[in-house]
Image (cartoon, rainbow, N blue to C red; front, side, top):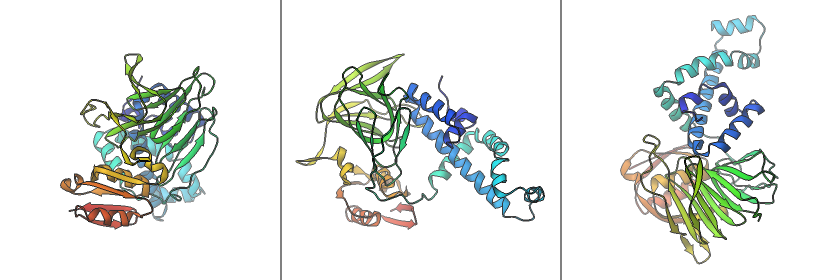
Length: 363
């Protein structure tokens, strides 16, 4: 059984999963993702809406608690309850009231826009890689502006790009070597022919026995990409209850899967296999991020926007459709976000306004 966004945002167990309050619910939905990797996009959309509604409700509660003449505030003061009590006890009742309304499509869209436009907290240094050992059944996340290096129980090395999430199956290294990815990661897979390594992303899977490859699968990008650097990998596509081998990639090949449009749920073009793109003799563009390089090759600004948001922990809005389709070729490494934008302005002119972590680009 799969769920819609409307069903998820009013599900108590899914709400607990989003707020990380109950280990049982976290395990339940992690297991659901392993069984239904095609639901990654729906899960991420729903999670953002739940957290957005939670933020608005908490903000409303804080405003209420600050109003001395509020009847509800007076009731809690009279009963001797603290601010912590206000946040603990009324939450389920108020959440139910809000999520009943949230089931309406209009409020879902409004809440999603509200959350995406909130200023984000500053992340740690861009290259602040850490190296934890990740056990079976665990989830590892990297924040915007952060790379994270992890080692799986089989000694496979994974480098997560900014704003990524990796889920390791509970039976990893014993029954299987399955992981689910939202975001981008470079995999250096330990060899084990008897137990294939499988990466689940939205709409397809990658199977390897021991090799090195990069997977880019952000839910807000137009395409998902898998780039092979060493060895061989198989691209698996779902067909009924089974998977079929769609392509076997060779070194320096990239599989490109158009993601389904959020409204039509249909892909605009068919998946394809293309050659990796090299910036120079030793650096391909697909893995340049590992070396903190930003390399754009004839890319439209509305695609560059997503990359800049993840790298610099900012929210960017492009207010002009013509500007969104401007294409740029450029390379950056140590530049800050203002230096990057000013450099892009030199090729195709645009204006922008910045307020803390919110940037608006217009003609």
